[in-house]
Image 1 (cartoon, rainbow, N blue to C red):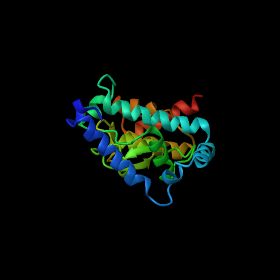
Image 2 (image 1 turned 30 degrees about the vertical axis):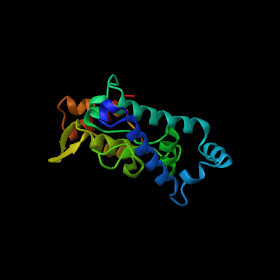
Image 3 (image 1 turned 135 degrees about the vertical axis):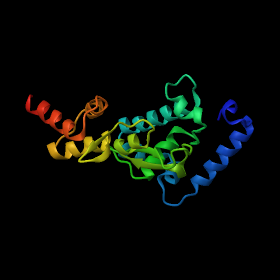
Amino acid sequence: MLDFITNETTQQAWDRHRSQRERLLVLPGTMRQKFHHRDARRHIIDSVGQENWKGLLRRSSHALSRCTRPEDPDFHRYGGRGIEFRFYTHAEYAITALDLGWTPGCGLTMDRSDNDGHYEPLNMKLSSRGDQVRNREVVAHTTLAGTKISHCDLREMIEAEIGYRLPRRLVKSLVKDGMSGEEVFDAVRERIEGR
């Protein structure tokens, strides 16, 4: 980790990462343990597909960037708050996702269990996009039948009723325009019938 963020020397950071990595490599029965054998590594990558593997590595790279690069647009929400990326390699991040049960097309992504905690194997879980958006500071809310509801929950309810997915920003933009939940339902129905 960069010492201008953590106020620790490079040697201390290296020692911390090395001890964490050694602790994680001994977990029995995990893909992490199997990954260090050359044949098993190829088998694991082939089992999820090369493109899906690269996608997991890209997500890891984006998480690292959010935590360490002040020029990243999301740095203020991650590294600026002191959140660190504590995976030893991008492959370790990908293997953690597989250990948690991630599969291609499952609709889930890696999320931190403790929103104020670091990116590290023991603080990761799989979450849907809606769950991740609900954890953010900025969520649009409206009322439906007199109850406060987030735009994510409202979109999921509408999608369940109409039977297919809506564009992610459609419901949020209608809620931000000041519509109630009932008005959003009607507006979406009108757009669907108008097609």
